[in-house]
Image (cartoon, rainbow, N blue to C red; front, side, top):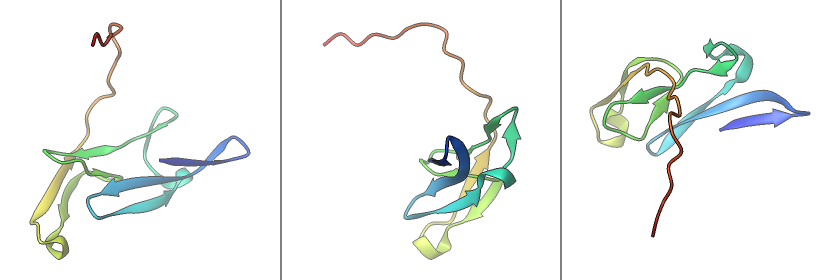
Length: 81
């Protein structure tokens, strides 16, 4: 989640399991003008840095996060119910 003030990004929240981390928007890594998000393998967590993230305090071992190139929309998807 990105927080804006007067139309400008101010901070960003990376969510991880039962908690998360907030960063100043100015200090996070960016690809062009967009913030980089490192997704954890096999998990819903996302981080500001790549690598191994210790989760022992949550009763888990660790998350491994890595960079994934941005997704490019190649066709319109429709849902037929």
